[in-house]
Amino acid sequence: MILLDTAELAADERVEAFRAALLSSSVPSRVRMEESGERVFARMERWHFGELMLFTSSSSGWAVTRSPRCLRLEGPSMVSLSLQVHGTGRFGQSDRQDLVEPGELMLNDLTIPYEFAWSGRGGARALQVPYDLLGVPPHIVRRGAERLRASPLYDMVRVHIARLHADADTLEGDPGAAALGTATVELVRALLTSAAGVDADARPVPAESLLQRVLAYARTHLTEPDLTASRVAHAHNISVRALYRLCARAGLSLEQWIIEQRLEGARAALVSPVGRTRTIASVARAWGFTDPSHFARRFKAAYGVTPRQWRA
Picture 1 (cartoon, rainbow, N blue to C red):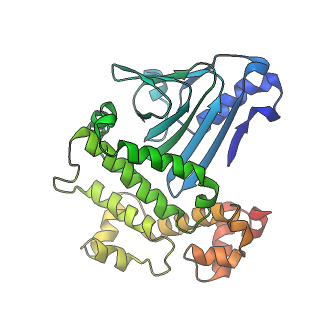
Picture 2 (cartoon, rainbow, N blue to C red):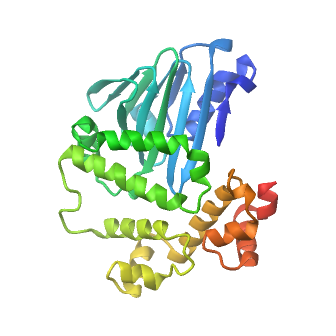
C-alpha cells in the first residue's frame, strides 16, 4: 500500500506530509528534511504479513531523532531491521555511530533513543517487528544489533528482505501471508541470537515467552478452520484450562484474538491484487471462516462496513 508519493502533492505540502507518513509507521520522534519545497521528494509503501510490517522509503535527505523526551510519548514497542538500498545511512544508538552502506543491514531498537539520517537520495526497506512477537529480551537484541555481520545468517536475511519486497503485493494477499510473517520473525530472531552468541531458548520458558509461542503458533495456523483452544493447548503440552489462565493474565481472549487476526488478514486480502480476483466467500474461507454470512457480520461489526463496501 502506498503511504506517500510527493509527486502528487504541492511543493509546500511535502515536508509535513513526509513527517506525518513516517510517524504513522514508526514511533514518536523529531523529523527534519534536508531540502524544502520542490526539492523534497519521497515515496513510502507499507505491507502487512500478519503482525509483521514491511515498510519502504525512498526520498531526499532527512534526519530523525528519538530523544529521551520523545520516549515519554507512547509508541509501539518494536525493533526495525532495515536493508539500506541506496544512499549511505548514518545511525547512532547506545554510544555507537555507524555508517550503513547500500546492501547492509541495520537493527534499530525503537524503544531507546537513536538518530538516523541520510543526505541526497536514499532508500531502505525495513521489517518492523513487535517486541512481544520477537520473543527476545532487550539485552540480546542490543548485543546482536552490534554484531549483525558476525552471524552466518546475515546474507540469508538480506536476500529474504529483498525477495519479500520484490513480491510484496502478491504475498500480502496470499492465504499464507500471516505464516510468512511468522517465519520471517523467526528468521530475525535467529539472526539476533546468532549474532549475540546467546541461545535465547537455553533456559526455562517464562509465562510471557509461553504466551508468545502460543500466539505465534496461532498465527501460523490462522487460516485453518479447526484452530481451537484444545488444539493450541495440545500443541504446547498444557491443559485448556491452563491455556485460558495464561491468556487471562495477559488480558486476552484467545478466541476473540484469533477472529481479529483472521479479519485483519481477510481485510488486506480483499483489496490485494490477487484477492480482488476472488469472491468474498472464497477470501473468507481462505482465512478460516466457514460461514460467509458470519464472516460478513463480524467484518461489519469490526470495521463499520461490509466486505463488499470495503473492497469498493
